[in-house]
Length: 196
Image (cartoon, rainbow, N blue to C red; front, side, top):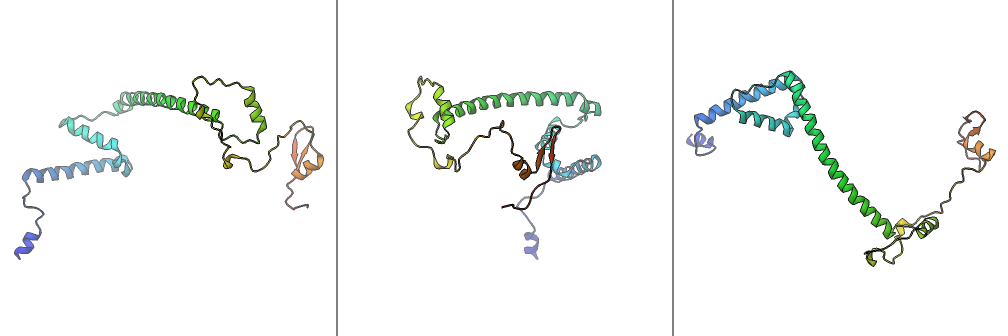
């Protein structure tokens, strides 16, 4: 019997009156916060927001007698201040983005100058690069190593440029199901069967 009584103890200390009162006060406060959530139709997951916890902490630090903001205060001056703060924060982020974008642009220029990923079969690109003169003031020779391009960057098939000025063959138009009239293009239909 004595063991059952001692078994229920969690620690060697008794609860204080202050602890009991605080527990009851917290329960009452949580009930009022819950009622406000239900009454305003606020989603329950809003209680997990950091801003919710910060709001409660600031109200607790203010102490008793805190007057809640009116609807007008929430709607006009507080909202205006929040918009200004958000714009300021966005400005700070934009400055960081510009800085990072500058770094990425410089890295891209250096990477294209290295020409490690250029396929040797792209003669037209190489011709473009031959026309440009690159002055290497202070550029290390290690930036342009004499190694062939990696296999994964080489093209697997031959690419041809399409000359858009060529006349279309009428048979080709029929195969694609498009007929060119003076007014506009007309879709004849799509040939699904293989004619081979």
